[in-house]
Image (cartoon, rainbow over all chains, first blue to last red; front, side):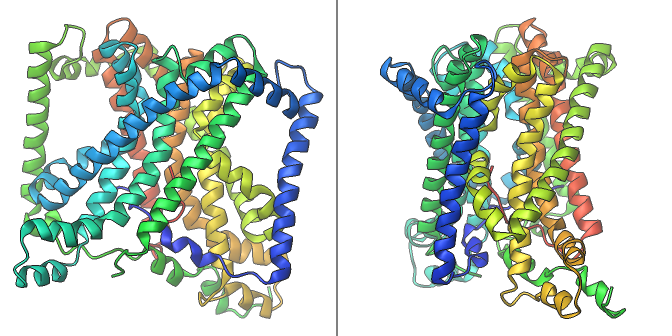
Length: 272
Length: 297
């Protein structure tokens, strides 16, 4: 049976990042500046030399973006999308943490369910969207369920892995000091598991975003996904690029948030 | 090659120690299921669990849900009919071939781009912003744009598969190459090659390329799920002949049991591909422990 991808301790990443000397730090900054400016220039040049249904220049995209913000269509869609996203991801974190702890502490449950859970984790959850549509119709909750389906498994597996790897010595010591069960959880199990959970949360943040967009393609009259669909039907490429830009920025911001949370809790990760 | 006869064997074996250090698994003192229960028990318990879940589903569906909601008894009975259905077979073949084709293209592009990014720091600085941004965003959001560019055609589906699959590969390969050539206490095969005056292209093909194999496979492992998601979403939106559209069509025409069989086939395909990758790692790269890098989506 294939293992579920072990939750990645991102603490290892800095291994490759060496401290750079002063000169090459300038060079790095310069390269980033060139990168941003070059990307913008390529976008602009491509956009102004192609027809407006195919590709649109950066300036045209930004002016369309401004227009969409001022007429309220983009803020409305953002609000609708991210309320679904927040609800789905929050639900996934709570249920994933609970499920992971339960599986870690109950060997029989783990034995019985693990292969099915791994199979579900590997399953392309988008394929279930039509079923949810038929069952629950258009609305808030079916979309939340799609986001939850995308975001639940990484949290559950990461939590389970963390809680399963608690060194028995830690619990033995706590017990030999006659620590109550509740305090074992409070002082050993939860602190030990949190860094792992955060790795799962980071993955859930990214996967939830995919779920949100996919759900809105089909289950929605509002939201960023359905905005993209209506724009593509009107060949409004500038609008699509503007929405894509916003989605990308949101994705980058959420990944940054996830990494920050992970790094924050990784500091007290116990190293075996 | 000016390297003595004994060296190539080691040179082709990039920094196993570092990867192992990164992938070191925490102990599992809770005792995996196998330690407390025998293998026979495991099978029994899993079969019982499956039967209980299916029975609960069957009961709930027939007691509370409308008739078109799938239930296990009917779904299982539909399996032979669906697997013999010409429309299902052609759709499935079309999707799965597109996914395989996209994965191959993505592996080539991703390895090339990842190698260059991992070894040439300035290229990395120029491209990293874009690779990271696209890796962080939900690529399915590009499907509407791609349908405008390519029309409602299989090309649009292939394009989304390639984009989805390339990103984790680039990301992982670049990271793997960077780690292998960083050489901070990790062997420094590149230094060895240079000391024997290996030309630059031999360093690339003899040291960097084999060094990135594990990360290529790790990237491919992540790419499979993403590629399938991209393919299914593209078929949903563009109405292309394929397993995704088969699911959508049958759910809409109240044949949800047939659609569920197709979902099962999709899951089986994902599991099979990942098992193959796992096998390739275990057979081809026995020194490599399933790693932890670039674990994003």
